[in-house]
Amino acid sequence: MSTTLIRNVEWAIAWDESAKRHVYCKGIDIALSGDAIVHVGPDFAGRADATVDGRGLMAMPGLIDIHAHPSHEPVYRGIREEHGVANMYMSSLYERSQAFDTSDPALRRASLEVALCELLKSGVTSVCDISPIYDGWTDVFAKSGMRGFLAPGYASARWRLADDRSLGFDWDEARGRKGMEAALAFIDGLAKHSSASLLSGVVSPMQIENCSDDLLRDSLAAANDRKVPFTLHVAQGVLEHLEMIKRHGVPRSSAMPSCPTPIRGSVGGPRTTSARSPTRAARWRIARRRSRVTAF
Ligand SMILES: [Zn+2]
Image 1 (tube, rainbow, N blue to C red):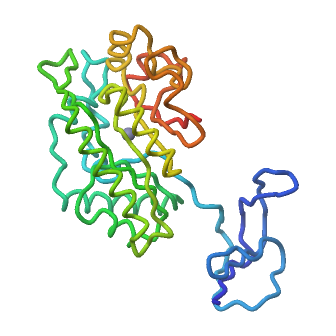
Image 2: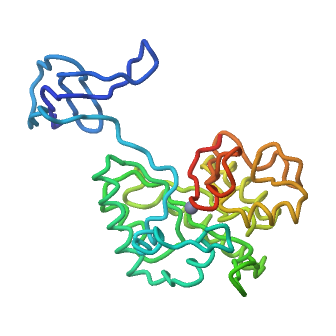
């Protein structure tokens, strides 16, 4: 088995088993053999097939991005940063998603490739990619060599904007169910992919306000059955927060696992993540920037 040695790396971030935490190390050797790290410390004495001079470099474990939309976010570059709708508490999310069509599979593949290259250059080696299913998704991901948690999204409703001040919804429960079935088939099929060791699925009903309670419950049950993660967009904007209060009397986004709503206690758990804002964040900040905080 081939061994690669990074000799005398300037700085390294390594796991200290006795301290049970990551620590900074200086001037050490790191040896990799196959898919294993076989040495982290001074003076590696084994044989190396390839040696990298670590002077001036930092080595660290690969970063994990638990929430990304690489198949379309690069397309919004230069637009998203400058675009806010004052009547929607400066959120551009709803208008942007209506104004730009990013459904072309070729566009999605190109966007994904750009995003994964940038993520790799930033030290990210594992990504949770929340996207619609499109041709070539798994192949581009496999080409990158990154670990992919692929989360095919679906929902019971779509946002509808009749003006710039109110958020409407086009409900189609059958469409949501069909999307869920396709997503689960996709997730189950990943086990047969040639890069199956690096690719796995995540159950991802898209937004809390766009999914019926039944769809959310069944989605979580499907994730638990398969022992795969579950993710959901929550607290993306003030309009969603107000919509949740209107429907349920409480902002269930603020305390998802325990809030007194029809889905109390059913969404959330050890395998659950969500895109959500800190509960005490100022509302204008929530509207300006969707937060990506892990919620366990
Ligand atoms: Zn998102």
